[in-house]
Figure 1: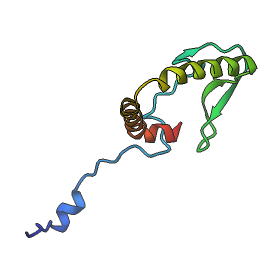
Figure 2: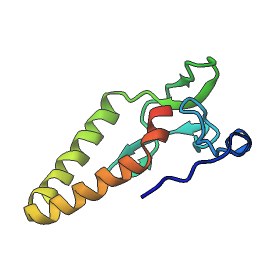
Figure 3: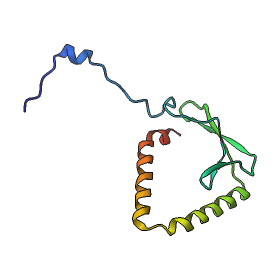
Figure 4: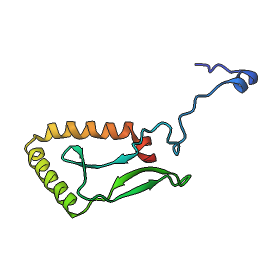
Length: 116
């Protein structure tokens, strides 16, 4: 099978579509403020302390996140324990399907997660 050769002019004028740069945030939706994710949903924190997350490439603030305190951590641990109880009752093959789907979602959003 022969590979078709392109002329130099054709190659020089060819347009390439590039994905956003990995450090670019224009393809990522970042909220101005984040609360805590406990029990499968975003919840207000007991702690009222927040801290900024900073983009290391330009030192601009990306967002503000809550600094959890002991009360928040206790709520998260209780929610995780409850989730584990129901998770451990699910059959291994069904858990495997969930884990595979979660891994695919993480893979699909890897660039976004790397930026964040």
